Structures are given as C-alpha cells and as structure tokens.
Image 1 (cartoon, rainbow, N blue to C red):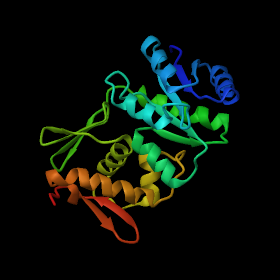
Image 2: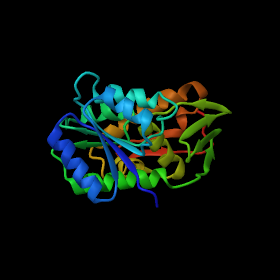
Image 3: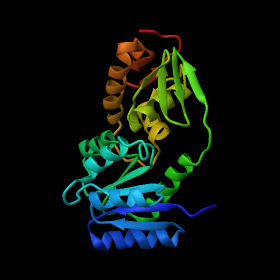
Image 4: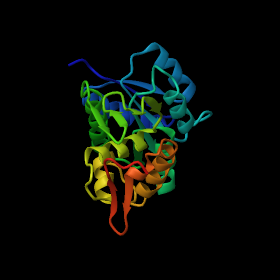
Length: 231
C-alpha cells in the first residue's frame, strides 16, 4: 500500500512537530504549514490524502480554509480534521458546518488522533459504493451525493452522514445516541441534542422537494426514517 500524505496546518511549532513525529512514526508522510495561504500552495504542488487544520490560524482561519477546500473541485471530498482548543458544543457545530469530517479538541491524545486519521482514510479508500434509494431519493455512498427526482441536492458532510444512517435503517426507531454513533462515529464528542439541530437543517433542505416528512420525530426517543412517505 502506498504511503499516505498528510498536510498539517498548524501555526504552533511545538504542536506541529508533535503531529509530524506521531504521524511519521505511524508510517505517514507529512507536510507542515503555519498558515492557510502556505497550505494552499502545498495543496497545489503535492498529492495530499488528508488535512489536519488548526482553527485559530494567523490571517485566514481554519474555518475559512475548510470552506475554501470544500468549494474547490480538487479538494471538495478531501478528509479534513479540525484541531482546536474550542471545546463548546456550538464550536463543534460551527466546525462541522464549515465542512470538516472530524473535530478534535486540545489537549489531544496523539494515539487517538492517529486512530481518527486511519478511520477517515479507511472510509475514503473503501472503494465503489452503492446507491440507497427510497421515497424518490437516491443516495450515492461512494461520492456522497444525493439526488431527488433526478436533481442533485447539496448536503454538508454531517447532514449527509445523518441521512445515510437513517436511510440505511428505514422504519426503525433510532435514539439520538444511536444516530450520533452510527452517523458520525464514537470518536465525535458532541451532545445528543446536536442531532436535533441537524435534523432541522436536513428537513429544511428536503422540504422544497416534499421529502422532509420522511423523517419522523418520536418524542422522548429519537427519530425514524419512514419509507414511502411524501410529506
């Protein structure tokens, strides 16, 4: 298997060195960048498989860099881990909304971070996916796209993960905790009520096509994705 290239975008030299040491000891090749601007230059010159981005960068911050990467055709699907000292739930939601795949708070365990890197890379290398189809919606699990009646609908990574888990478990009542673990993984530490925030956003995106009603609220428990529901 070829060596994976990791770009670390971190302005703290000590943390960047720790990340390089840990990643290289695991067998990865590492590029380091102290700023978003320098990171963009590396990304245009070097094949990169995953990016670890610090939120509080000088100049362009990590959130803005993430949004830029998600809006570029060559980096829109690249796995991104946000590294930050901001540990509030609202901060995590803001990070996920920007397009990151995972969110790690400082201080962090290098071993845990490596585990998350490996998990994201396994997901990326999983190979051709399949279609999940119901209620006039078609979810492609390989390129992470959603089509409704033949029209593409853009979903952010967390919205996509939540809908995919629901569609894989149709007509089954799921608790918020089950949805967090199943959609985003046990390594993501956010409160259960975060699910409610993303359900509201997901329903708003599905509403124009008349598909929002497929996601039903089970009060006191969680949610269920019902097939053959149009409203």
